[in-house]
Image 1 (tube, rainbow, N blue to C red):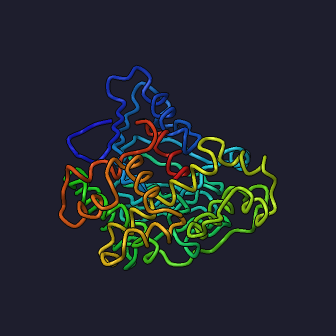
Image 2 (cartoon, rainbow, N blue to C red):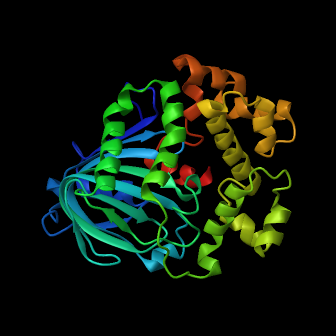
Image 3 (spheres, helix red, strand yellow):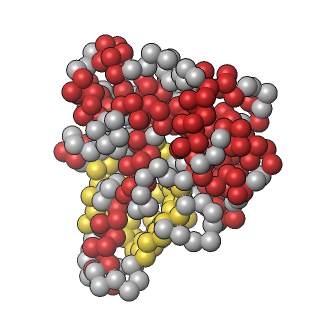
Length: 344
């Protein structure tokens, strides 16, 4: 983790690695099962590089890799609860996407993958820019509870060009952003993407057991304003047992997850120019906090500054004051970051 940018960043490269594909495989296993392709079967010649930036609400990644075969199987989905949408903009090379139907992706194409569905693809010598966005950060119309079909925005369509250019520009500017600018970008990009992508086609439901985590997170996201959003309410409204509920949030705990989501949403409102006239207390109460003083203490513990200071930093581009507002809650590895997105 490092770099000159004030944004938390993570850099991986296979240079000076004895077993480069094995190292790459270990890095991406949080997302995909991977195998070398025929052309990259000689592991010692494989080359790959990944640079990731943590924007608080999403990850921005630029990857360059010689190739390989990648997949998420139905068997893996039975135990892997990652619940993210990946938007990939192909810069160079070719990608063969075989799930749900075979399709070749070319430079300029934008692919939208739902990690809660089976997917398989292969590529050779590809450079791409990716946004990894948690489902809960997107509206239900774009990322509903049910898994969605993979989508491609071709490079010769207006929306394909627009989304691709937005992501490219974000990648080019990432290391130059000041902390207060990161706040604005981190809170606005998911909304912009939602407007561009529009409603998604859902797959046939995989059943309540497989959808339990997604249903819980979506319900929480849509009810953060409720002061009675408790474990008891979740079990009652969604018809699940307490043990089933706690298993879904065993990494952080239910209450911690709800608190993090409320804090992230509060931060978004505090930094939104459209909410400049709203009282901080009103923002806190509308996010389910019963007491403004408690909200301020919790906010400071999470982000390193008060709600008032965060709002002022966003208005005045005060980099030193804003640094804590987008730092990851967890550790500094790529795997930590991916899992943390799910945890709020």
